[in-house]
Amino acid sequence: MKRAALLLLFALSVITVPALADDIHLLGFTGYDYESPNSVPGTYLAVGEGYTTLGFLTDFGVYLEPYVNIALNEYTYRYYDLTVVDQYDDGFFFWAVLSPGRGRFFEDSKSAGTAAIYGVNPPNATAPPTFIDGTLILGGQITNLELTYDYIANQGSFIGNIDLDEGTLLGQIPVDQRNGWTLAGLAGPPNPAVPDGYDHQISGECRIPGPTPASHRTWGALKALYR
Amino acid sequence: MKSKIGVAAVTGFLATVLFATLASAQCNPAPNYPGVMIKFDNDAWAHETAYTPATLISAPGSQLAVVGRVSVFCSPFGDLDPLDPNTDYTFIWDGLTSRGTTSKLIGSTMQYTTKYAGGGFRIYAGSPRNAPTAPPPALPAPGVVPDAFVDGTMILGGVMDTLVVIVNQLQSGSYSSSFRTNYSCTGGTRYNQVGDAVNLLAGSWCPVPPAPPAAPIGTCTLPAGWSAHPTGRWDSPSTVPALPATWGKIKMLYR
Image (cartoon, rainbow over all chains, first blue to last red; front, top):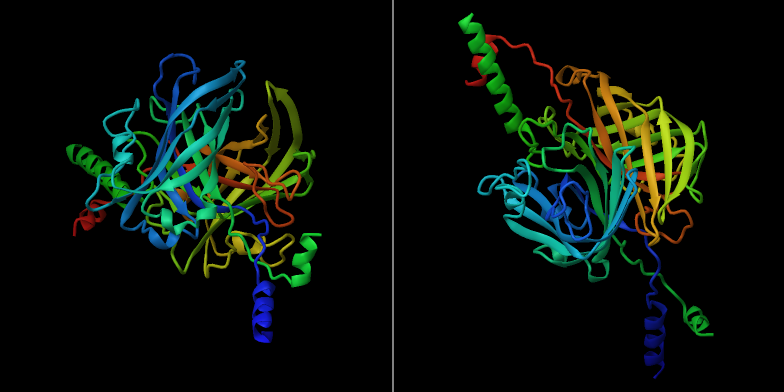
């Protein structure tokens, strides 16, 4: 009986209590964006128009780094099926909120796969097809995406949630860290790097909640939580 | 004359082939467009002398500096490996003096704009890999910041136009931010590969939370002393200077 009580006491002494943790870097990317469908030519991201960005993954955080090989493979991304549901545009500043879409990340063999090529005036024969071939390593639903652009400074940004739910590397990310967020900076014209038909250059990253650290608590501290 | 034209044509062809071969597969610019030259991601951070996170305000005269590690090299530096276990490719931006932050409500968005003038940048190849990775140490960090980011050989250095940082506080409570400037190179051991042509240095800017421990989406929690986490890229100059080559050197490439 005494032993059972001691065991119970020991078990309670190591009960873990969640604590807040900082977010961590999942991956970095760079590419370009464009309107698709561009149903109202001449109006940037009119309500009902679609938003797509695609390009290359440039960096991987601790969860993915052991499972990628940039010497052997090419890594690409695409955010798509995002539709403008509301927007503000006064000629100086632009803001839009987009309906849920998807973000997907791919791995394609350099030797056996097809190199990703932007081309011009997307969608075209190579973009998105050469950016979405190979193995789907990670993907998720993008929600609450908001995009801003300052026409005076020629720069903007987007921010949104990304809830990871697919891909061969999904299992490498702990379940409680799969609801993250994504952000990017947008650099528009004058910008000689932006191919014809694309709107802006993109530099961004995905971040996810940090691991939840365990902390040791005494029985007394636990009881105090309920008082 | 014909032979000179021939040599020029072959040189141009070889340059194209070489750049395409050496450049990382994470680069691939669209043909005839300058693409990313250097990318930095998770390991880059900003700090400044008179910035108030709670208000997102940089006081006039505040000195901004950014330190970080390179994550990708593209053309014309595709021969450099940022993951080389013996070499630390790091950078610093400094000399950036704030002109103060202006804020205005546009629609439902509160926009904070800060301009920094007089900046320069330097990129180093040092050994060993001693610069910290995320999370960075709290500041001040004597002997580490900026020391570990500015040791080794300066491979590229230059000047920046006015750096514009825009932080948008959205109605949803999220933050959406960016930075942009033009740069041109002035020196470094790799200067002859890029010359002094002007191009873009731009990306995202993730400020520290205004009211920690709450960390709204679009803010990055960092140790004490840091003000933001930038992610971005130097683009290749639109015109890359031709490298002098002899017929013998060209033939050597085929042997």
